Length: 358
Image (cartoon, rainbow, N blue to C red; front, side, top):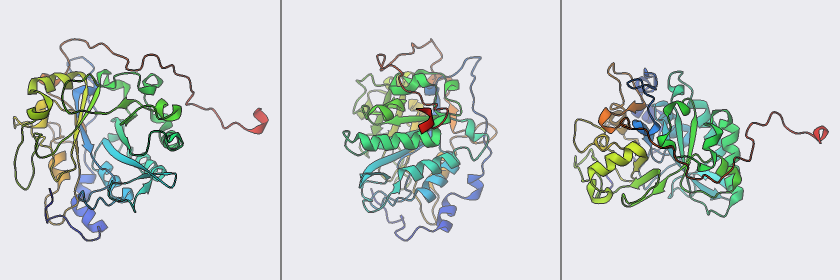
């Protein structure tokens, strides 16, 4: 869908700030809740703020990449799960949209931006931060994957979850939230990217078209024909059941797994729990909205973030689900998805090796 209200003029900082106002960037955050009825919730027991195409805030056709402006503001707005497309450009790893072939930002620079801003607010820094890297280059290019791994280690080495989560070994949605507090979680769209990047893979997001799967992290891409979402311009809802089984199946799966939904279209997912068609009432964990910079119109950012507040009105990027959608009835078996993979490498090098050490 395309609408004329998207601007096609250069994006100025004034326009950015009119969408991400200083009032909204300087929120009061509530602390991460790590206890419910004397039990520790699991990662899948939360609704998590997410952003799709986090390198851009323009429409799909333009897909202008500017992480120094857009990604920075998105993180400052309180988003804790971002999505980045990684491409090959003359043997360098670039972050950009599919149609922005002449643009893009170097992945190493993007990691530096993320590292600098995910802890810019003290309370917010205790929340986990999820980075979904959608590898758009050929899987045989291990040299590119090694560069990705090196950038991640350089910027987040002290913030990765426990080493047992390396190599996509566990179904992390079933693990307790305390295992990921203050941590950076790396999700990829595929495995087998060479040992260096495999080591830093904490989960794989699987694209599926139905609910007949046992993937522990499920990604669904929706269009106007098959999802329960709300478009601000036409205010229309669609039935999610047409693609992902009945509602009770979705709720059951969201108690055991992580479900991530996203779209390229000019829509945002309805997060209003007062509405039966809301994604919250399906128990869906992460709605990755694509933020849009608009001129003179109410923004997606405000509409989306207003549904992540505690009873005192403070922002809460990881919000516990209501009891109906939480996994509190019985213990879940913590399953390994890659049980044969041994942890072979050492992330914590004490010092750089020199000639004198040989």
